[in-house]
Image 1 (cartoon, helix red, strand yellow):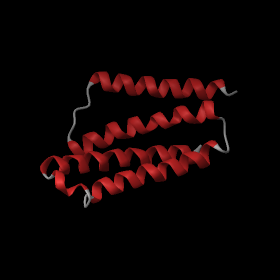
Image 2 (cartoon, one colour):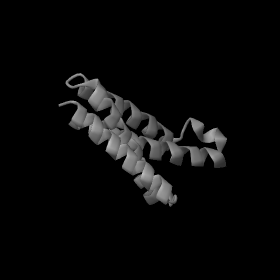
Image 3 (tube, helix red, strand yellow):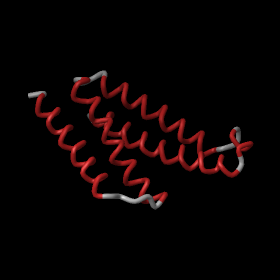
Image 4 (cartoon, rainbow, N blue to C red):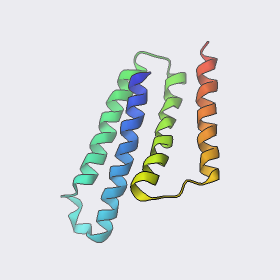
Length: 110
């Protein structure tokens, strides 16, 4: 379970770096090859996949895979912290629904 959670957090940082790299591309499209932010974002997604593979190899996929959605919650926080994106009431309701779904799936394991 820890591997899947770790992979979710790492993947959410990957999204931050991909967005940051994409913003740099808007200014200079020719910088695609030398864009370190894109490279870090891709690397973070690859690393998160390794964590995920390790995690699901030792647990129930029906319980662990939905935990990947915790990455969406982390991404919401990072988007506020790094890009000053708004956190609306509707987004918070969505986060609550994600968390409730994870709890229900985890309880279904028993």
